[in-house]
Image 1 (tube, rainbow, N blue to C red):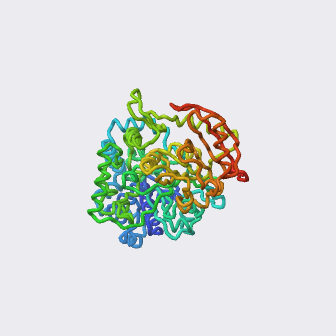
Image 2: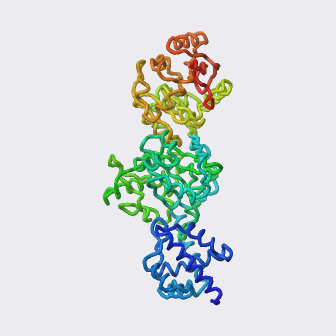
Image 3: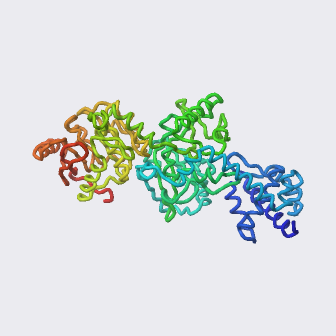
Length: 580
C-alpha cells in the first residue's frame, strides 16, 4: 500500500471518528457519509471507499458501535483513541492492529471488495430464498391486478406554507424545536399524539382520533415519487430493499396486520406540503403500552408466522424471523402491548404481500352472506354481492364503477364535490360507495348499517386501502340520533357535510335527524322501477322536514338493477362547493 493511500485512509478514519464524536446519539451511515464527504477533498466515490475501508478496522477494534437501528456511534474506547492517537496515521494503524480483518482492510485494498462481494452474495441469496425465486421474478417484472388499483383511497394533502423544510436535517431541527418527544428509525421519524399536537403539524392532529400519531418517511417526496427506504447502509440486502413495497402499498400491509390483530389501526396515508417540498407520512393509532413479556412476544410472533404460513405475507429480511427485528421480547422496539392487552408489531416495511388478490376475494366472499339485498343465481354460482368490489372478480347486483360514473357526471354538472368533506353514508352496506367517496378525496366517511354487515364492511374497506372511515352497526330507525353516533373529532366537520342516501328511503323512510344535521348536499338514489312522479312525491315529503332543492337528476341502469332515479339535493342556504 502506498504512503499516499495510507494517508487518505487515515484522514478518512479520523474524519469519521470526529463526526461521530459530535453526535453522541449516533448517526445512520448515509447521514455519516454525507458529513464526511462534505469535508473531503477527493471525489465522492474514492472518499466513500476510504470511509468503508477504514471503518472496518475501527469497528473490529470496538471503537465504533452499530446498534440494531443501524446507528453508528463512537464507543468510550474510540473517544479515548482520538485523544491518544492525534496523528491520523497512528490512529488507523493502531485500529488495524486490534484484529486480522482490520489489518487486512488497511493493508490490502482488495480486501474490502472481496469481503463485500462475498457478503453481498450470501445476503442476496438468503433474501431471494426467503421470498422464493418465482415470487422475486414476479414482483420485479410483473404486477398483479390489485397492485394497479389499490389502495383505492386518495391520500390527503396537508399544506404548511409557513414551514420551509427542504431536507431531513431541517425536518429533524423543526421537530426538535417544537415536538416534546419523537423517535427516529432507519427510514422514518415518529411523533406520538402529544408531540404531534404540540408540533408544527398540530392542525393535522385535530382531524383524526385523539390517539393518532404521525410517522414521516425520511426520504422527501410525495406519494407517487417517494420510496420508504432512506438509502443503503452496510449490510443491507439490495434484493430486500428492492422488494419493499412503495409507501402507498405499505398502507395495505399496515391494514392487514391490524385486521389480523397484530398491528395498530392506520388512520390515513398523507402528504405534507412544506412550501415546494412534499413529505409522505402515515397517521396511525399510537400504541402507548409496555414491552411484551417473553411469552407474550413469542405468542405474537407465532401469529405473524401464521400469516406467512397462510400465504398472506412474507418477511423480506434475509434472516426472516431469525432477524433481530423479531427477537423477543422487544423485537428491536417494534413489539408493544396495547392498553387492551393486544400484541402490536408497529413496523410494517419488512413485510411483502404475497397472494393479496386471493385475500381480497376471500374477504369479499365472507361478506356475501351478510350483504343484504344481494340475490341468488345459479348462473352466478348462488348468492352474490349487492355491491361489486374493485379488484375482485366476483359478481355483484350493483355495478359500482358505472354507478360512480353516473354520479360523477351529475356532480360535475352541479358543481358539487366531496373533496375534503365529511360524508355520512346512511345504509352503507359493505361500504363500496364509501370507498368511492374516499377515492374522490373525502376527508372522512361514517357509515350506518346492520350489525351483521358493518364488521365485514370495515374489514373489506381496510383491505382496499381505505382508512378514513368509521361505522355504526345497528338497526336504523326514524328517530336515529346520527350526531351521537359520530366520533368526537368529526363533530367540527358536520356543518356542510355530504349525505349519502342511496336506495334506503324505502326501508327506513326520511330520518328526523335530516332536519338537525347541517348537511349541504344529499346524494339521493331511489329504488328500482320508481317513476318520476313517485320520486317527486318522496322529495316533497323530505321538503316537509328540511328546506332543499333538486339541483341535478337523471334515471340510470347498473348491474342487474332495473332503472332508478339518482339526484343531488342542495340544502337551501348551504354552501355547495367545498372551495367556496
